[in-house]
Length: 432
Ligand SMILES: NC(=O)c1ccc[n+]([C@@H]2O[C@H](COP(=O)([O-])OP(=O)(O)OC[C@H]3O[C@@H](n4cnc5c(N)ncnc54)[C@H](O)[C@@H]3O)[C@@H](O)[C@H]2O)c1
Image (cartoon, rainbow, N blue to C red; front, top):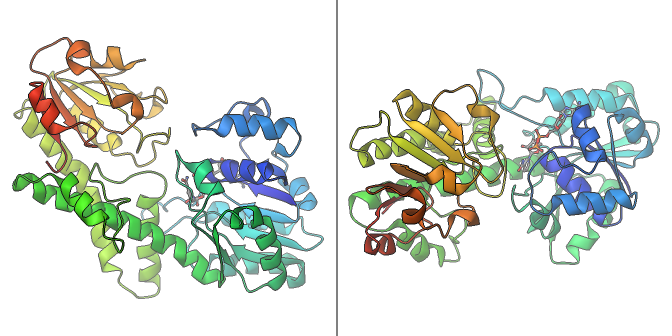
């Protein structure tokens, strides 16, 4: 099939490449010329395991193209996916749909035969209705079907998640579009993915409800971890004990820093804004948002306690600063709250991240990027394990820090507290 992906970010690029790998003819469009040039030269603008190989392979055989020419690509394609950003509006909790509606307007100028136009971007309920009305201003309704097909991939596991999804949600009552999309996804359906055809509005809400539920699960175990810390229980035991209950499940039930990333923070806010719009108070999700926003401050308080309130001139090393492992995404990472706050209190920060230096910290003094774990750790008073990269899982801290009395605050509980105690290392975890 001839597919056009509009927006070549985490979602557009990964799904575009995967569709090409399934044998389709895909053009990935972006308005960012530099990004497109890089991709044409086999350079990947984001960190995503396995992506480079797939891009190069499919580009080479001509199934995957990159372009900034939206008009031409839309004209040549049968299926058009909108994958642009839907960030939070300034001074509001609602999603900013400017990018989506701009794309809809651009598409409306280029339709001359039947096209399936699909939102893969996460968009609030009734956005599909709005896109339809934008298109109808220029074209007859019989020339297009507007479908919602939310994406559930996770950064860091994006290719696997796209290739082996639990479910594929298709929101449309257009029979022709549904048939074409079932065909498009048939290689994934035959590998066990559940194909669910529902209404467009339901598809839009399924995505937000899913993300809000997962964010709630993380926040729930984070609050239980706070309780565990006071009563000498290891929260890991609670996660294991709860997780084996099939009604609960073990995933997204690990205590850690505040949830971050490009989805949960903005999507939890956006669904409460939708609730408010329809005069429904989604009070549980509002509480989750507050609890999560408070979490970074709680963990900072813990850092002060660990350092006995003496932050000034303390050498603090962060291992990992992105919002989770296996991604370079800094959006809404809790390190963006914790590091500036520690700098303000006089700490000297060094950090190492497998995905490299982060521009977000360039504006601060007293923070230094280290090019490897060894130089980051040297002479630290406190090591904060902020993300759970495999690279951080078997470090010989004593050998590398070369200083006595250092402390470790493992925000991901990747080390065993009892082993650390035996090794005479002052170790602190989350919820233990
Ligand atoms: N990142 C994830 O893990 C993830 C997972 C599921 C769903 N989503 C959703 O998918 C959407 C995209 O997320 P992302 O993380 O890929 O965003 P992103 O910021 O990485 O990429 C969006 C891209 O769209 C491009 N763009 C914007 N306007 C354009 C236009 N008019 N023409 C062409 N290109 C344009 C931007 O230049 C950018 O490269 C969001 O709604 C997000 O919530 C993201």
